[in-house]
Structure formats: C-alpha cells, structure tokens
Image 1 (cartoon, rainbow, N blue to C red):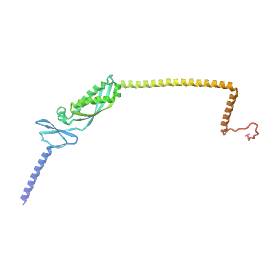
Image 2: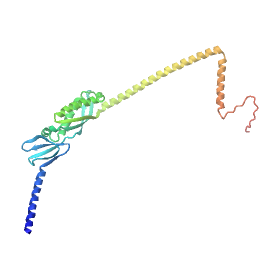
Image 3: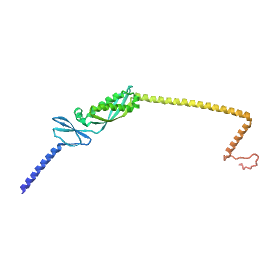
Length: 275
C-alpha cells in the first residue's frame, strides 16, 4: 500500500512538473499589446514583418521572433529654433507639436529610423521648415500675421512628416521673441509715438484755449456795448436797479448768518454791552 501511494505521488509530481514546464513555455510565447500601442514582429530569418499587430494578447516564437512595441497615441513635443526674419532680425521661436506615428508605416519606421524616430526626425525637419517660413515675413508681420505663419508652417511640416510616416495633428507657436536690439528699437518707437501724441494733445489744447479766449473777449465786448447802450437809453436808472438788486442780495445773505443782528435806523434799542 505504501509503495502504491509513493508511486502515485511520484506520478502526480511528474505531471505537475510537466505542466509547469508547459506553462512556462506557453507564457514565454505570449506578449501583450496595450491600448494605444501597436507591435511590429522581427523575425531572425525573414526580418521585419510588414504586418502590424493590434491590441490584445498574441503568440510569437521565442528566440526566433521578437515583438517591438510602439506608442501610437498623440504626444506633444516642443522644438525651439533660432532663425532670422525677412528684414534680418533675430527671432527666437518655439513650436509645440502634437504628433503620432502612422500605424501602417511602423514597419518602415522601425527599419529606417528605429524606436527613437522622433528624436531623429522632428528637430531637423521642424528647424528646416521654421527657418524657411520665418524668412518670408518681416519681424512686424510675424506678430500681426501670426495665424498665417502658423498655417504656412503646418502645411509644410505636415508634408515633411508624411515622408517619414508621421501624422501631425496640430501645431502652435508658444514662444516668439526678437533680438535685444530690435526690442529696444520697438520700445523707443513706442516712446516716440507717445511723445508725439502728447505734443499733439498740447497743441490741440492750446488751440481750444485760444478759441475760448476769443469767444470770451467777444462776449465781454458785446456785453460792454449793450451796457453802454442801456446807459444811454435809461440813464442812471439801470445803475440804480443793479444797486438795489445787489443790496437785496447782501441783505438776504446777512439774514441767514446767525452772528449778524439787524438794527433798524432810528430805533431806540437798549443793548446790554459788557463794560
């Protein structure tokens, strides 16, 4: 009985060992392609397969085949470039790219460029395109026609990326500055324009003040002529009327003042004056 149990356990151990080996072999022949990834198979005998493997779990032949995984999701990259404008001004410009590899072009990308294709391609072609486009515009146009510059860069850069199997989803100019001399010249120009506007304002103000003085002088002269005519027509009556109106106004103001007491003429009023 004991020998039978020992034989049974030995058999079970052999089966378990065989299953472990089989499982290890199967596991080593599986690979996963995650979401947003694609795989290219390299075969030691036939080279890079032109078939692109999609997402999921797949089989391959260990040692003979090797899967190379690529990220096909859109990724950003900033490319700074120093170039010159049409009017020979130094321009510091940074372009932000949103790019991804074309899934159907992955075998050719791996064969010709490798897995570091973005470092090999994007800086060089972006530098080339930016220098070509910026040279078509003056420094001022680069600021006032920024959308036109971006559209031109996007058109040319998309064509260049297609040659390498890359898809350019979007570009944007995130940084645009000029040389120190040009910046100082712009600042001085702004100051000069402000000074010119201020001088123009002062001239306009003086003109308006001059016109106002002329109008006031004409009004005073007209008033003097009317007064002279009134004196001639009414004699001293107008002067007496003005005197009465002035006295009435003074009396009204004094009556509102608490510190003033009105004493009628000829009235016998007893006041307790301090000694």
